[in-house]
Image (cartoon, rainbow, N blue to C red; front, side, top):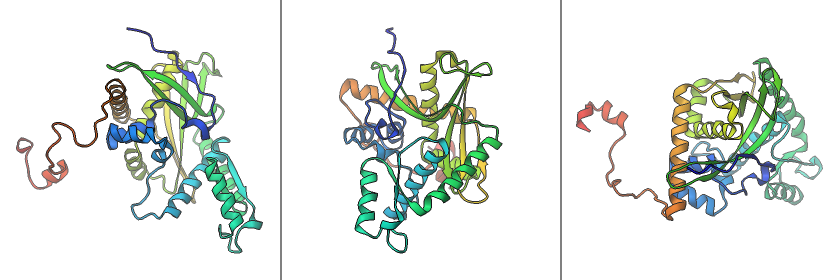
Length: 313
């Protein structure tokens, strides 16, 4: 069996990352939640940025969604010290009520977004920075350091029955050690920290969010990418989510992955990668309508609630 090409660090800005070739966790999420046909369509449209955007409430307005996405990007960049570039829109060109109501402010806002950057109103910068500083202090109080590398992009190859598949991912923050010393050349232990600014970091809500948004898939891909980059880390990578509230009292939940969470994410990632590899090899990208998928039934929990027994279905 031929060796796979070596994994490598991708020296690329967050804005340019999505323009790189390769299968990603964002595409894998689409493949698992919808179909490999949908993932291929996203890739063909070069619309992965849209696929990566986190879903909100069904009744969320476009303006509210954009505000939520901007807020997450701002906290991410200010807390980690790197991320999407921020463009400060001067207060002097805003409307008197502080909104993007003037032609000049709308032009500045739209130009920033067109360039893959995040606009932030001048009078809001201080408040954002205060919350980001509190987030950093909460992270430190929980025993985590941000002394590694943020926005680490890795390219690697996965082996599939239809041939190797080029993959890529970007990790929020990675700390690598050899013993008790930081070491980016020959590490033997590492920690991946995934920052998630949220209004509510309660475990139940975060668990549902992680499932709905495919965070298990992304976590599995991140660990596999780091292991491919540093084979010495096999079995020695800790992955933690940092769910940081951006509302008072600015609480933090920093769980590790359970064995079940890690296994489920790994299975889904590999299933998506294998489907992508088969599509590349055969040119076939199955959608919802596939052979054998010809009946609609009811969800398992509904059948059980109605008294059906396992043998009935």
